[in-house]
Length: 243
Ligand SMILES: CC(C)N1CCN(Cc2ccc(Cn3ccc4ccc(-c5n[nH]c(N)c5C#N)cc43)cc2)CC1
Image 1 (tube, protein in one colour):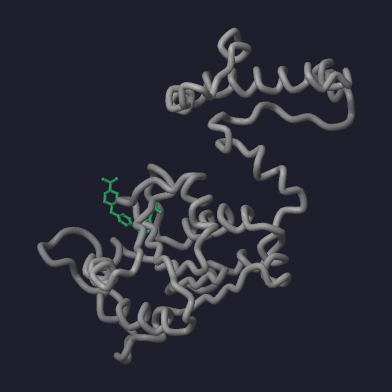
Image 2 (cartoon, protein in one colour; image 1 turned 90 degrees about the vertical axis):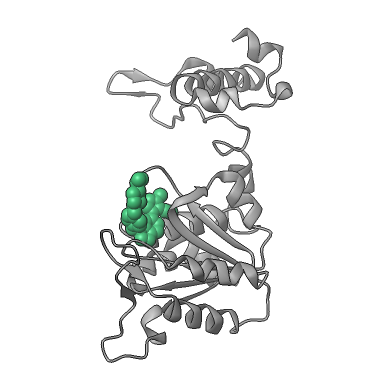
């Protein structure tokens, strides 16, 4: 997978070259290119924003600069690309989104700042039949799209074959079966007077699996009843329902 990020703050994306993601890049599983939007400005001030039509607070990012930047970055590689635009007004970015994007050969992220990017940039890409997703990582307001891109790239790349040391981790993620994961423990057996639940030390794998499922159901019911309500009919077996 090739990933391109266009931003006025390239340094914000430096963490993508660290740790797991850095190793994925080093292993050739991911190609990452970060581009400074100001490279496509033509004025001495390298202006990327302007006042909003219709008035209102803040500034809006100029379509000309973004249009030239996206055209140039898309032309760098012949692989078909999905353009991703983080925005507070976007569709929710979920684990399902991350899973779906693992099938893409290329993702091009457009990081806005100020009050966002002139809508005609997205409209122009769509009318050229380029796939464009406007997505939000959560119901809170950030200052720009860069942090959202860090989140989304990590969520996608960790699902790519060969990236995680133990692929089972991705399969047993929270959300992958629709539930939150339950509590996890490691040594010592007792810490500050708190003992690891005995069942986890029993060696009885059936009992352990049941206990873990019950804790996941309990935690999901307490913290995310919406996830429980959204489970498909056949997601819970009789033992789950008995819980
Ligand atoms: C009603 C009320 C919830 N509204 C809210 C948004 N207000 C306008 C407004 C304010 C600030 C920004 C800053 N900004 C610029 C580009 C950009 C990209 C992503 C995000 C972003 N924020 N939160 C997320 N989950 C995001 C994602 N993904 C924020 C961005 C952009 C837009 C208007 C009021």
